[in-house]
Image (cartoon, rainbow, N blue to C red):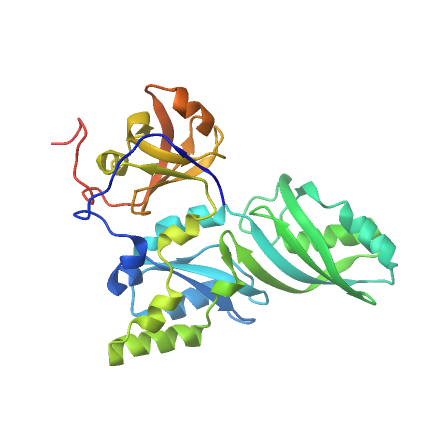
Length: 322
C-alpha cells in the first residue's frame, strides 16, 4: 500500500457529498460501471446496446473495443459514468493469448524470440483499426509463456494501452521465421478491474429483475461499481471541502486546498483528486513531486484535466463564486 504524506489537517462535513459506498442505487444506475464478461460473437457495441435495454437507460459506453471473436473484460459505464471512460482507455491491459505457429519450432527458440518483445516495442496498427496506421511505440510490461503444445503457444501479456495483440503475434512469427496467427484471445484486466469483477449479461438482467419486481437492490449493488473504482490505480491527492467547488469549475488545485497525497507522486503524473469522503472530484496532472510539497508555502500543485463532480455539490468558497 502506498505511503501517505500529510500536508495539513482538515475534516469533512456530513452536510455535503456522499461516500461512494453510500450512493443510492438510482445514483449508481446513472453513474456506475459494470465489468462485463464479453463472449465470442457479439461486438462490443452490441453488448452496450443490450445493457442499455436491460437497465432501461439512455446512455452507456465501453472502455476499449474487443473484436467479436475476442472474449473477456469489457468495462461498461452508465449514463454520467461515461465521463471516466477516457481514463480507463489510457490504463494498462492484460491478455491471455493462444498463438498458432505455422511450423514446428523448438521451445528454446520460442522462448528466446518472445523475450525480445519485453519492454518498448514498435507497432504499426493493423489495416482494420480505428487509428492512423503509423508506427508508434508501446510498452510490454511482462510477457509470460504459460504452455507450449506442439505449434500452439499460450501466453499472458501485460501491456500499455493501445497495444495490438494480433500484431504482436504476427511480429513474433516474423522473428521466428515461420509466421504465426492469433488463435484465441481473452482480456483479463483493464486498469484496476480484473476477472474477479466480471459479470454476465444474465447476471445483470437477474439483478435488475430483483430490483424492479421485488425491491431488492442487493444483487445490483454487488455488481455495480462507483466511478471511484475506475481510478483506484492512480496516485491520489485528497483535498479539503472548501477547495472542491473551485476545482469543479475547472480551477487548478493550489497548495492550501491539499490535505494529503501519496508519497509516490512525481511531477507529471496523472493523479486522482479526491474529497475526504473518497469521492472522485477530478483527474489532473501533478505539477510537483510529493516530497516537495512540505517545503512549499503556496502555489499550484495539480493542473485539472477532467472534472467529474458536479459544481455545487460542495459550497462555493472561492473568489470567483457569487
